[in-house]
Length: 503
Image (tube, rainbow, N blue to C red; front, side, top):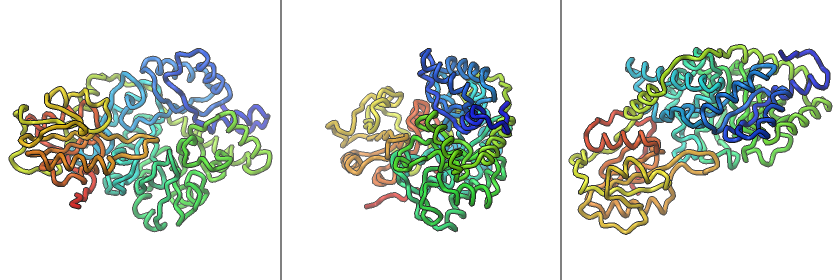
């Protein structure tokens, strides 16, 4: 176990490595040289790893191996908002947080039981792999319809709903012996900028921030969240510095005002929001962060911290108190594994997806669309979704760039969008919107389905039917087909406000 009070150079370096969660490339672990790099970091005292990619059994075996050679338990973190399959092959994908909020009615005990089962399934899948720090839940309140990086990752635009769902996730994850992580403090929901690309600036007063964006984090602390991730966001009313480097935000608001005594993680330090900042790791630690997540170069980060200690820019006492906090949180992790069936998880996930499909506008007489000869399916979005259950069911299909005669047809527009880091948008551009609206005008009747951001639908108010499906998965497409042909009712409720655009 790490000794806080030994100050030999080697021991001091080990403490500094303990402050870092480094990237672990699941696809790379088949390489002996890559494994050796990881083993070196473990021997130097690394705090943990954030896992991206790889095959389930390979990643599971490798995590067991590095845990067995580590002096202290490693944090194994991963962005698994939609379950382990979001990162690792051969696992179960669950609906995104917004789809969960569309499916689950918090006033129905039977729905609450389904939600608990879903979060427990995500927890069991994580523990099976060896992930002990799932970086969930997202507690951002999605207030900006053009938010490129939160969008369907948020539960809702309603703070009370975000609080309720977030608390349910935290309770279940923590009772499963995992380290839950609320993100992205103090709130990434009211911006149209992706912090992977640029630094978002949030022009809100301190009071507005406390009453809205920070409310779910305050409640998460009361619920017992073990860790909170700080976003790379600038809030000039409090501090021009990014929140992840701001002592006013981390120490002043999160620690002192909200009384949080758990772990504070930075968001990934390789993001472009911080590209013009010098000596990032030292600034983060000075501001009050405990864990430096995903720095570009781990060894160089430790050198920067050592140099700051020598110059008294940071103190060893501060490092020791951070180590104490890290070791305390690591003791909370339970390493028991539950028996479960991946098939049952798949069925549960499909059931929740079916519960989430939401009808936003429904002109009588269009649905159900049982006569396939009268329908024409028009795709827009990523080509990888074109060979899909939807295309296989509706035989007459084309992309929006093809010439087509829709005059006596029911035109079904399937719009596929996704929320992804570095992408810069969660919607569709104006030219594509105009092209779809022109086709809507030329069709006999029209149905627009958003497989992704529900905000896309606000641009197509002239369509007869609007449907929100929240994500482009196969199971979402299968659920929509059932609803379209009348085999299943639309059960979802829209978790965000849509102002339909009549311009």
